[in-house]
Image (cartoon, rainbow, N blue to C red; front, side):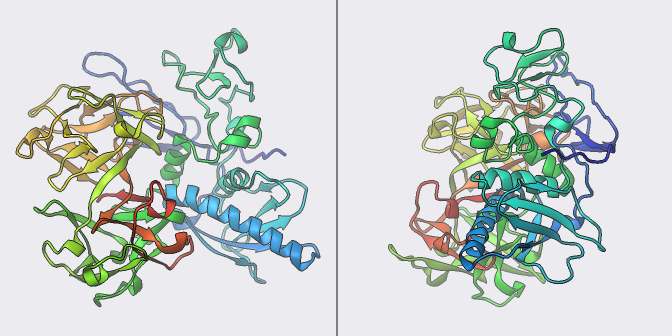
Length: 517
């Protein structure tokens, strides 16, 4: 199965430093030359994150419906529908969670499918999809072969097409051809191919590390054709996340996003106290936009402002049960009330799409770098965003420490013993950036701007431009009264009740992405 699309290609050239705004997009080939730091050491590179060949869906809204076109038994219809439900979960938890994409409806198709993505559920014949928004007077079509056991990876791949993205191997700069390798010598000689970290042959930027391929062999848009990717790649690559965000935007600042890519939402969006907190489609509305307000007692209020009135997230009744869930509700903000204080402890700090910021060690003097999540022990990967605006390595007394004044570009923050009165450990969390509060125009930056494990976190200038390698968010459990914020029953449908429940390690329905404002 091959997908060939129009020759007009939008390519996203991006750079890691503030001299150029993030995710520049233009029609036709576009390259940005390497930038250099003051010491002339190159710390920036370029990459084209996903190839857009279709029209993006307006506002990221994608109404989806399904059809079964042949005559089938009730049992066969039920089997195909269960397949479709698994496909939906995979897509909701990948594309919808990664970017400002809103997949809606998912019911049987009606007579008018204009503006819809119509998914045909078949039994054989392979899977395929057209690319992008069809316009208001037509429908886009996808076929899902429900006999293909690779449900999740096939669904993510085909919905990638439906969102407008082409195969990575249809790009002009693809030279990997799914050739497996363990050394450079196994790749064709004389054409610049090397053995990439993905285990496939490919090319690298001139003068750059061989860990920086032009085309992304780890992309979900390279999967289903490279056999090991088809079997093991059930997540989006870092460039997939960044590319989707380039086109559709990130989740809005102040969103708290959980299972299925749905946001914590005050039911009904009114100022009435006692309304349930639900998991709902992310709307960038006042009732799903939260501010984290540190309190002197050590916790944080989570506040939404609707029609000028401040409402707090509140554990209903102020007491949690050790065996059953306690609903979360909206309430008036009560300064320091224990059932309105939440902690962000033991969380991952995500960067470069979906990678993790980790410490190089657990002793004073350790530095920060990015790794694939789970690549290092959790003792180096889990962080606490304290109520005193510090970033602390969970389980230690070590905090990220930034030299005051005007540190040289490329300076690496280190871990030092936490001192609450130390201004050089105070950080500002604003619009996804982490800024050194008492250093002049210095933000945390993934040096090189590439999702390469081991890339150092450095200080760079030009804060406030929304660069993709200066964008961070927290991911993990949110706690109050000794329990975790939980989507009851692990339900992934819109409108599921949210409350407090005993914590379970890495439970999907207790994992939240907090995109700070």
